[in-house]
Length: 235
Image 1 (spheres, rainbow, N blue to C red):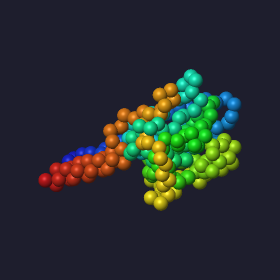
Image 2 (cartoon, rainbow, N blue to C red; image 1 turned 90 degrees about the vertical axis):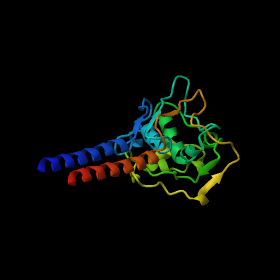
Image 3 (tube, rainbow, N blue to C red; image 1 turned 60 degrees about the vertical axis):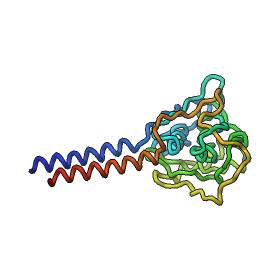
């Protein structure tokens, strides 16, 4: 009986360890290659660069496996969403948080940022400045400079973001200034697409379903498995 109890407890422990691994998104993003400016200030306390943080934030709409491609030859920036964007991912694109992160990601690779108006020209809805539609996912932290209101200045600013700095950070599970229905601006443009302009680097996702959907499914499966273990333990 002692052996059976130990085996069951070990199985439960393994289940929780597995769950922890599955909840963390699988993310791939470019490294900073700019040799002109210093970008260390833009990293979070986990030493993640703006590109990696951007990919983590976008994973909350696209699924747990997501890649942010590096700037290729001839590309100087990340384009905003195009007209066929999946509507479910619209809030992840159409906000200043993502715009700021992608602008910094472009800059740290030696590129530049788009004007805010160019970035969001195809958005059907735009969240109020400094808000994001989903909580910060497990595996990252959002630096304070990401909250810079670039909708007022019209373009992301290296110097302004550097002055704001990293702290205080927003941690996993926390919302970035919760957006509400009353804080959504509506535009007259068409719906969006997951892939930006073909010549621009883009996000690609191989996750099945939304991040939060995958998490909910994991919890249900975990509870079911634990129940089965306890039933076998005392039967």
